[in-house]
Image 1: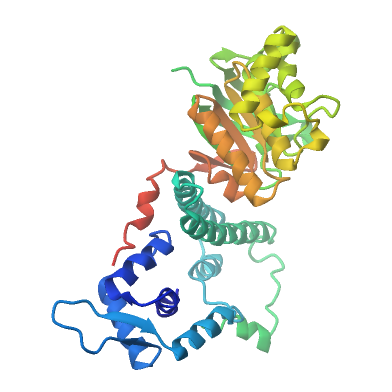
Image 2: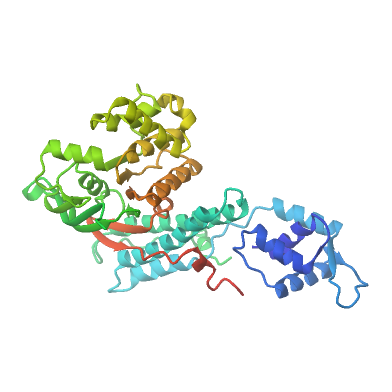
Length: 194
Length: 240
């Protein structure tokens, strides 16, 4: 989540105080991503340093500083919105590594391990579903954030289901286990940390 | 309070000897009024068999099945059919509405089969459709309704009258995500009115609407979710 670009987006609507930016960020993301005031001001300082926002120079003591987006800031925001997220190299997923490690460890019931994670994921999905259930139809920000989390968790559950099915079909240890094929460039790339 | 459905050590086998297949082994499960329980498992795990036994469409090889406290083992086919009509509603992936009947006639049908006079059955059915926001679609035939509307009619039919146990097999499988969510909201609403629901699915998103998810594998119950901690638990640790 880019706080930097989210603040630029809020400032593209017009000049705002730092405190108000923090409140609006939380409201627009369905209050799911809390942001403390320190984070807001640190990010604003960096944006100002990079000439993407500007602020009043002559603020009297006790008055809040107003920030506004610059031309460069508008261009940066536009470029960010149109740039696809970098999904070309998968991250090293902790759950994938756990299952891979478990498959090599003697005495570990991989199906039981997968079920433990599946249950936990579905329990989390249930809480997001409750959140949606309690939200009003007009609370679109919250609904979209909850949907995004539910789809993400659902994808992990599907991966676990597939892993479960693949491992179940494996012959017992020592019975014709295939020798791993040599690493190719593309296989290595899958394991590269982003 | 009497449970809407109680399965105790239920097993179901098909075939004999070497050809014997154990579809369900020693499954115990209780669904109480107002509760939505999902059964999850891969293909062949016994989900559909469990649903057909819970719906008295098939008899268990061993164990007991109570519907609203009534033991169905040893019941005659006619008695089972009567209990089913009065107590159990079914919802399937493909809606299973009768094409030649309007929405309201489809919903009224089980009441009429159970001896309720046509006018009274129709009035009850119209109220059930109204509850699900389908009052204006009551006189439409199934092929004049969208997929989401057809499934809502099927849910109205499943909970019309005194039926207090809803059994559903992949009820959102033929719907897009928004309509699927609408259907699950209706099932939750029915549960808030005291209906007990048992839904079988392989879909985690659908299962996440349930109060409790029970996992089946190779015919056995292997696990179930804990009680919901509430959505506020999502924020635990999120605050900086």
